[in-house]
Image (cartoon, rainbow over all chains, first blue to last red):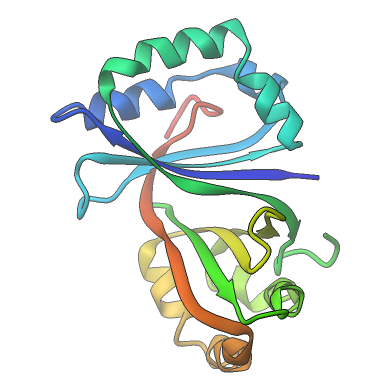
Length: 102
Length: 102
């Protein structure tokens, strides 16, 4: 079952754009790990936050991706760019109005 | 610029699954209006909430879609299924680690 993660990541003061650059660095390994979609963005009304929406082939694929050495290294590198505030939600996809099947 | 909406919708007691059915009803008009992705789902840890992630060609396309007669009718029909609690965030997409270009 496709798994979705929608998250907000607080950026350390003045480091939002570095965090965006970090999160959008081309990472073909994610696709191999089951990542179907990973969009990163900003909202200028909230200039210290970066947003992501992700779709994965399964919750398990997402969980396993967090253990990949590349992903662990990336998380460590991102740490100084983060304020420590996180938000969002996760869910199992059950359908779409754009498709006739689930 | 691609626009993203990630939302949580509280369901009226016992009506989550009806709300899911409503939100996943095939609506080709959304695609014509600029909807690129619209995934609907649930999280059994929070059984009175339905989640959506949407991508649109632009914030303007999303805004305009809310005025379509079909969408207005759909919102009116959904009203009794909703608790009135909404959450989530919106952002402008600036890139993806799955692509080499923005």
